[in-house]
Image (cartoon, rainbow, N blue to C red; front, side, top):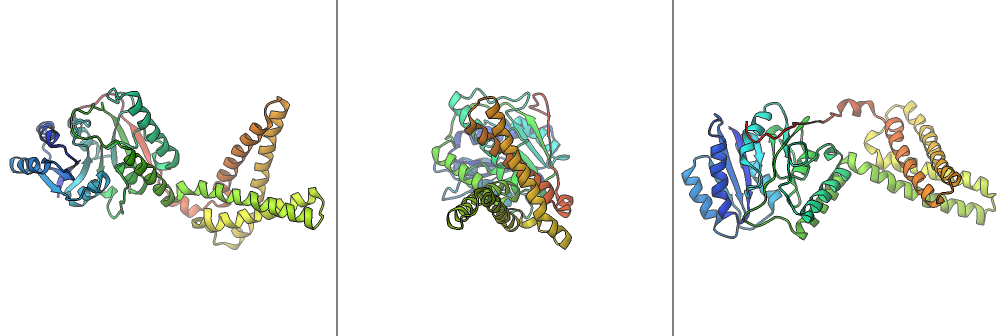
Length: 380
């Protein structure tokens, strides 16, 4: 096993592969590192011929040409499987990712599990992208950071330039859609520390861009799949779904009690609310927090009363917002909406911390430490 594998997916990059090999070799010339440059190529032009020539000239260069293009994400995964290095760096062949940063990434990996060059911390630059590319990039990052918990403290979670130790992906089933492989690793990988270093993104000179409507659609599919497969990410959406079902149950029971059984409205409302709370509690216990099941009878008995107290306080929060809007002669529908949002957040986090808290789960949970390096660092 060598010290470092530099994995570079390529698609019709015949001009750039020569340049990037020369720049990597130059960047590492003063560093006594046993490394390899591994190209995973899906090209339809003569890039494979250029790679064959480079492999004959540079003993560090290896390549695999895949006949049927399968996408950048799968190319990186196959690169991981074929690589020999203890440390891995992934970068594009289009020279938008400066090879001169490789020594710094490599040395940071001696202490850090995942190292991510970032365009969006102090000292970084997006390379003067036009407003449309900036907007698309910002939107993609924002979607990822909203829906995927493990990316929220990372400024450049959608980048294609990153380094990691092999242990991070050891025995991890990576199955990316499209080209945002870093997010797949951040969600599924085994790591404790992430470190961001600033870099200047370089405008593309030649080759074919990965940006397309199809790839953006793949990114959204990838986000959805990662969210559904991550208990922490899907739990809040399951909570909201059960809550909506609870509203339907509440209205249904209320209608039956008032119209068919002629029960007074106030009493019917209270009974319907209790039935809906019981409905929500059962579904949260069996679905939303199914992996936080209590084993002690005393804990099980106390769960529903806890849930009722939290739900009652949530209702009080909602009505308080409505009263506040009424007092200030604001739109009561906006007040009700604001109250529902605040009440829902209260219910979710309070139940998570109190009703379905699980000490054994807490002990096994590892906080991810994310740090940033300030200042431009293009060489070690």
